[in-house]
Image 1: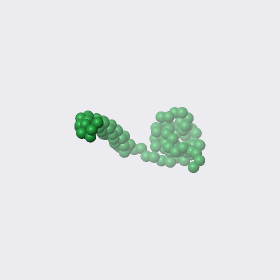
Image 2: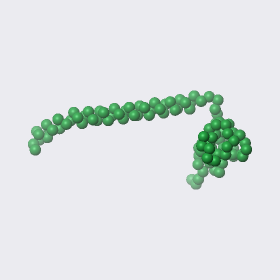
Image 3: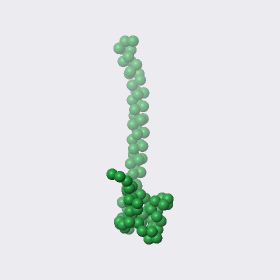
Length: 106
């Protein structure tokens, strides 16, 4: 095969390769744009919460009620109250508390 024949082949397939690259880039840009929009909405939701402040309440005490935004320590972990609750952090009720910092060795 001659150089001229190879150049002809490359000229023939180059537009198809170029089109495929453009399609792939466009899909990637669209996916990135959608993800960025989702993240911006989530950030705005967090920033626009009114009346919720985060307060450290110390070590968790049984039978005490905690409000939304309360931070407590229990068994070395730091927990955030997601709603008003008297549930025990880490007791399996995932919609009441969120583990913020897990205990363990450094």
